Length: 262
Image (tube, rainbow, N blue to C red; front, side):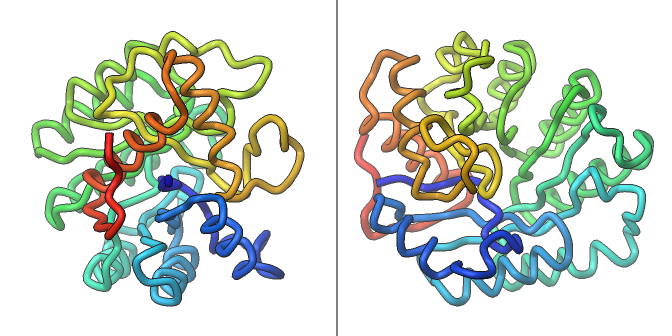
């Protein structure tokens, strides 16, 4: 059994066969999928999926750093609050991306800071995207810690220093199919994250793991990533799945009649 802690099932890539994708995930062992709403439209679609598959799909709501240039606190905090009132389990995906710089960096920082404040106000964790923005992400984690806001660094590809800072602040670190790629060099970080702070995700429809790399990614493929994490940590896939499931339940406040046993 596993929980996919980060998937974009509301993405248009799944429009033709979304129900089949969900059923395939269940057949593969999924007892939960956190569907990410990184825009108002995506959050609405993710909410609809959570309502269609109660107890299986949870949803989030926030503004991605790529869209920070058009972030408007007066407008966007309204629909994010509404989404949380409707059951959104986290704020995000928000954060910083200085690799693509699709939005000016000062606008990214302002939108991220606003959403951390909103997470504090609403009592929700943050789902954080960070790329090539370590110093400012570290500063954001420190501010969040002061506000007692927890979160997850999703699809982690950063340094051991950043991962440790997140763990020290009570945050979680999530690994995706990237850990199966030939060019992956972060096994030391995979080993260093404590048992009670590790998550696993697909980031579907992106980043399909080996041996299905090149295909549209789906939650049913998460066991490949879990197996790679387990091999790196010198333990069994069942144990990693149980740990990551229990951690996702704790972070997002998810309930399950089939709680993971570590």
